[in-house]
Length: 133
Image 1 (cartoon, rainbow, N blue to C red):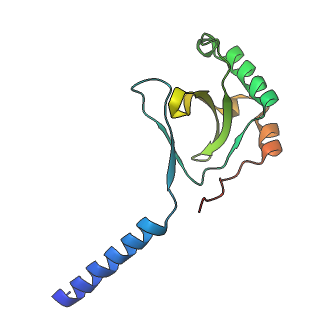
Image 2: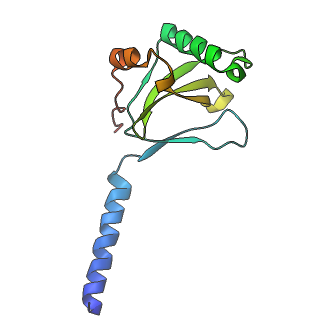
């Protein structure tokens, strides 16, 4: 490839990168951990997700406490529970108020371990969030 062709390819690549950097929505979202020093939970922005209502949140919380004694020791009810699909697997993520920072996550559970998961997936029909302009 000659110098002129390399230059054209470089400019075209730069233009494509700049257009993607300006026009592309965020590729992933980040949920900070409630545990100081622990890494954030990173998820594709297009991940299917839904926030459980208060009744389903309590149901999931009670089931998690019954199944996982260590979780029960926290003795707090999460502010929200997120049902989401990550890498093809359904998960429950418990969210708490993290002070001024907003919500943080404290636990992630494999949803397949809870027999009511198919019912909740059908009820909420989780989907990716609508893009923000």
